[in-house]
Image (cartoon, rainbow, N blue to C red; front, side, top):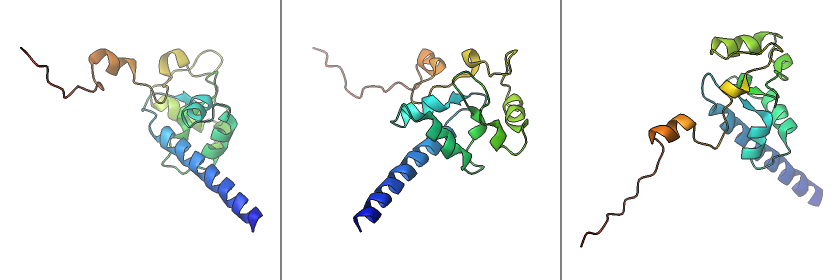
Length: 137
C-alpha cells in the first residue's frame, strides 16, 4: 500500500514535469529554437535536460519538438523524427540557419523561455502600466 502511494506520487510528479515541458515547448516562437537545458531550468529542475528530451520523445504532433536543440545548437533529437533529415528540414522551412558544422546559429535564433524578448523590451510592449494616479497638489 505504501509502495503504491510512493509510486503514484512519483508518476504524478513526472507527469507534472512532462506537462510543464510541453507547455514551454508550445511557446517557442516560429523561427526560433531553445535548448533542453533552458526548458529544464524554467520547469524548475536545471539538471533535467535529458528528462526534457525523454518527455519530447513521447510528445504529440501538437508540440513543436523540432525547435528544441542541444546546448551547442546540434540536432541531437533528430533520430526521433522518423526521417533523419526531417528535423533540419522543418527548422530550415522556418528560416532557421545552420553553421558549417550543421548546428543552429544560436546567436541568431535562440529563444530563452521565461524572458521577454529584447524586441518587446525595446518597444515597451509587455510592460505593466501602473494604475495608480499621481496626485498633484
